[in-house]
Length: 120
Image 1 (tube, one colour):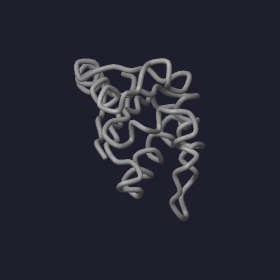
Image 2 (cartoon, helix red, strand yellow; image 1 turned 180 degrees about the vertical axis):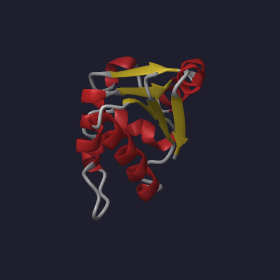
Image 3 (tube, rainbow, N blue to C red; image 1 turned 90 degrees about the horizontal axis):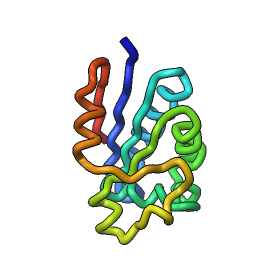
Image 4 (cartoon, one colour; image 1 turned 45 degrees about the horizontal axis):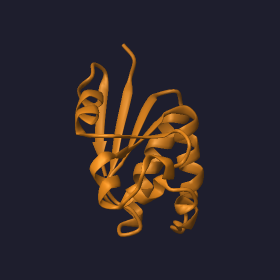
């Protein structure tokens, strides 16, 4: 059975340590060959936009831009539909490789056989 890790990050610059932890866990898992689905919700929705991850800084943490790039290379990144709408983020605004999807897709991924979900 394939292992899948679904990481939902709700924090952004408002809670930098929690945000960085979520991106770090998702990135390490993806780079190690685990199927990863990273969900950007709440304040982390802004990181779906070009250049926003590069603006994030947290001492002693891998740059968020690098962590996001790793997940995009080896896993899947999804921006929450409602979170995007509340921030007037359109599909054409987001980084290449990021999809916009809603709760039904999150539930499907989280409840699939072999899936483990984490929320930060």
